[in-house]
Image 1 (cartoon, helix red, strand yellow):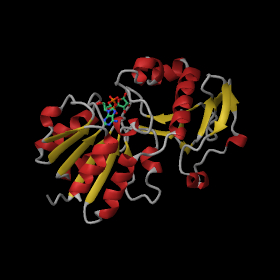
Image 2 (cartoon, protein in one colour; image 1 turned 180 degrees about the vertical axis):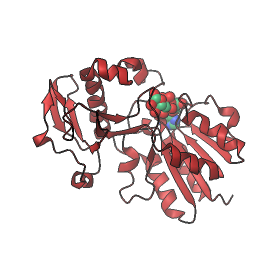
Image 3 (cartoon, helix red, strand yellow; image 1 turned 90 degrees about the vertical axis):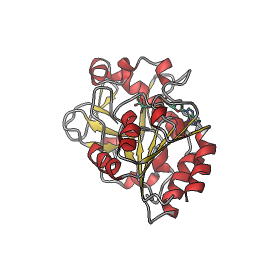
Length: 267
Ligand code: APR
């Protein structure tokens, strides 16, 4: 089983055991919010305060969550197998992969962006931003969170809030003085890191999908794509997924239990 080029794709299911809601399970985020109200460029243009209330709440929740054994076992696997090329692609924006990997053994390709980043809505300059602007009750309350590794507060693009300007409760970018927006890929926008992702998918001989329902493209197409190129495909998920016909192996269960067990077998 000497796989040399392993690509791992994760979705919200890997963070469920850290207490974060997924999107499409019952009670998930898309049960609570209409995604067209908060996760599209048009929604931000129409009601930026509502969008910032939603992402402030998700920053608060993500800051309270901790990486779980599934996040940690991925990093350990990469560290213990230096002779293998291991690439982590995540659809998650919750920063838990980053916080599980302080020595950067497995830097995630965050194809849907990051909750701990904001960007200028005019020039797209990206800032590390660990502030929530509204509290859980939806009141204006800029608060610094422990959302990202503390070391990032020394990063050149860290957003220091003491000199930030606001326009009707919303943060303005230091570069252009225009609205800051969450550095999240919204519906209708192009995912990040796709060139690097395609390069890794083309050469992978083992593709592992963890905790994703396979509802959103292009990530939902990676299974079929890698299998068509001859890679072995493995799905680890709590329930059957849409593309299960493209899974050579399906392991059902909670990520916190099945991921460490599967990776130990692979090592
Ligand atoms: N362990 C393993 N799998 C789990 C667990 C768990 N503890 N809990 C839930 N799951 C599974 C669910 O069965 C489901 O198949 O995780 C999957 C989560 O699916 P979604 O909620 O659709 O989340 P995801 O696939 O990551 O969504 C992809 O959709 O809305 C967009 O941008 C958003 O990145 C997101 C994308």
